[in-house]
Length: 251
Image (cartoon, rainbow, N blue to C red):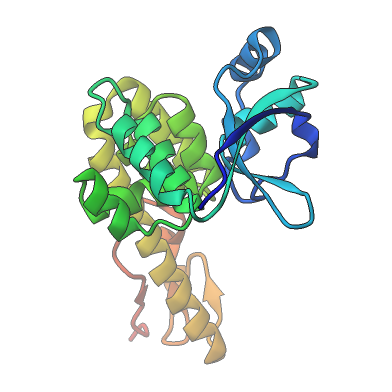
């Protein structure tokens, strides 16, 4: 028979969390300030390993915020794992089914379930959501930009798009502006950015191929263009999607 869960007050700095969970970007100043003022009100859920280490299963964000806020002790519910996983899953599913739950809260719940080994397919089956919805939420949560977007109260779809363009600062800035001012244009703008990215990649690949063939690449061949020169005036114009062309040899 499994031992009953026990509630303990522990130093958050002594707890361990998954290093890829809840990127620091999700720890907003307001959230840390709230923890500093009020403490951690809801116990985090953790498992004590054989070596005595207490590993947080649910509540990584609260734990990390408590460390940042220099809280000496936080409430920790110690459970047996994975035996208690099903019970926890049931509780999380009940929370997901609450009408007032935001998409950010829902994504966080999916993430919590994934931490205790529940697959996306199983989460979808238990919650009545589609597998695509669950996978999108988990993918957004795995990205710093996606987690930050969810932390701002944005939708899973918006967070997923921000995660997609995380490495492109210019695109990210443009998307954030669209979300704030014209959210109905987000999908259109995101597709434009994808098309622009693909066009730039195709152009770069073509130029690289020609360079391996020993053909010099010039900005503007002008009146001296010949078969060995590539006319690439449009190469730096992001709106141009047509491939560059080789100028004919003057007669």
